[in-house]
Length: 367
Image (cartoon, rainbow, N blue to C red; front, top):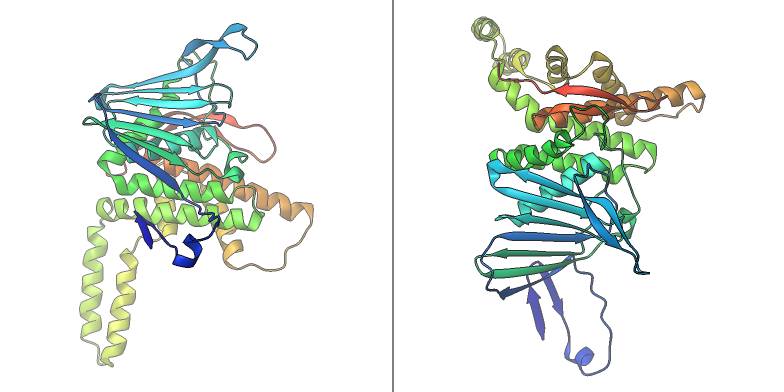
């Protein structure tokens, strides 16, 4: 006898069916679908993690003993351009939920919310239940959760509360979610790249330092290859260099040498117009998005993880590694802010003091 489902398969033989037995099967999620009279698009997610984002609404809270109080435990995020209203409620980690009105694409929204809460609040969202209503159909999903992920946290790229009157309303924070949704719809490849690379770094965090260093440096290189190098290939065409390369290739073509050598020489000349990761970083420094210190830290840390050797345990080398890692973390966050076209305050980390608040201003790289 065979039972089948989407992305899942199990076979039970006759002998195992005709006797009492227990089969432990790990499922990522279970989904049920039923008809409903409600035709309004709606998405609901439930979780039990503590999140750290700005609050703009207070609610009455009743304790288990029956006492009543009020707490600022809700964030309402309006996204008029997409006709979305998002509510995020967190009852101090015992139960939290997210409800999104007019949501037509639950997979997109779950990815965007997961990235937003992770990048800005330091957690990897582990929902255990969701419900999506659309076109008189209700889809309920029950998820498996990872206990290790529930107990793990990461540094937040943005402060959740600022005393500056300009940012007191928290809209700068919510703009990360708005910009994530906009980016996913306009350029899904770019959003999925920052989401995947951020998730890779999150999972590696608090592992052995070598593993974390490797994940962070390769994530930076991944963003450069997926997003920034293609942008610069389109916007940074050097017509003088192109002309010079053509002239040099003509000279090589007329040389009286073996054709194999000619081909190798021409390929070597063409490499002059290739935009490498180092070249892209240099251009980002010129644009004011990154600092020279950050890019040098990436080169040093990338070289160390690519060519591991016996380490010195002296304090000086450990501090240098920590300093390079933190500079790379700032660099990584800057690449994400730039991809999201973010303008506003951000955390800027240091190896020997508390994070400082800097203003980030994304640039138009196509100019």
